[in-house]
Amino acid sequence: MSGIARRGFLAATAAALAATPLLAATPKAVTRGRLRQSVSRWCYDAIPARDFYRAVADMGLPAVDLLEEPEWSVVREYGLVCSMGYGGGGTIADGLNDPAHHEAIVSGLTASIPRAAKAGVPNLITFFGNRRGRPEAEAIDNCVTALNRLKHPAEDHGVTICVELLNSKVDHKDYQGDHTAFGVAVVKAVGSPRVKLLSDLYHMQIMEGDVIRTLRENKEWIGHYHTGGVPGRHELDETQELNWRTVCRAIADTGFTGYVAHEFVPTRDPLTSLREAVALCDV
Image 1 (cartoon, rainbow, N blue to C red):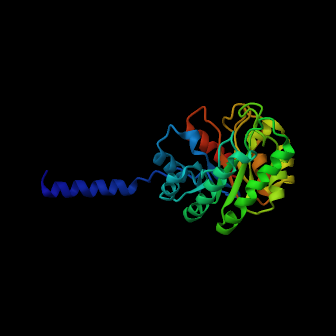
Image 2: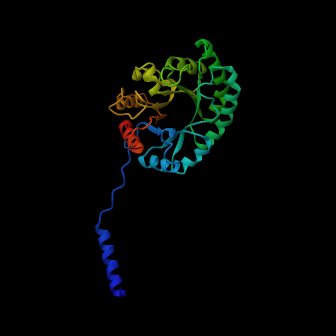
């Protein structure tokens, strides 16, 4: 091709490109943003971490939930925060209700709290533990004792310790913190703005239902929410018992300023399911 012909070809190509409208970027799933939504990483383990974080950011989500400490800084590369971190808070079975686990939990979280604050992680998770025959009054006292040792470091660093409510009927047999009333009794006795409940609404729908009234009546004690459809812990769609848009509107109407993190296991294309849930809950 001669120089003249080449210049003519390039000019024609440039003109054609200029006349062609650019493909619109995929719109954000978050447009209203009254609720700060997040998503639990473990439900999407099949997707490589960085690909997942990029997709989450593209949807307009600000955060990813339930990350180990090495990932706290990685999500920040994508403009995200870890909304709930793991930080030595024991296990679901071995939790705050048993004094035998107090030293490990208290030392683990005490060490993690300043690192979480430095990384911009607002919450660290811990658990009530399995009953193993322990009366509720004794369990409440034991939990309060451990959390009283944690509340001052948490207050000093502005990090909230969240104790998770879970069902003992389907997924976590014998778990002691299986009703909102039990959790509220604990955090109310501790009396700290930095010790709250993680109310997993999948679990609480299984155990007690009456979700909206319960969250309204206990808004002072709840610092974080998880979603998940009942039955099956799947998509927040028409196959599930709860009207999630109404639930999320009720949460927003309480003035809640924490995170609502999606923790359902997709049965379809995972990122499509996540985008649909985010749009549904963007009240």
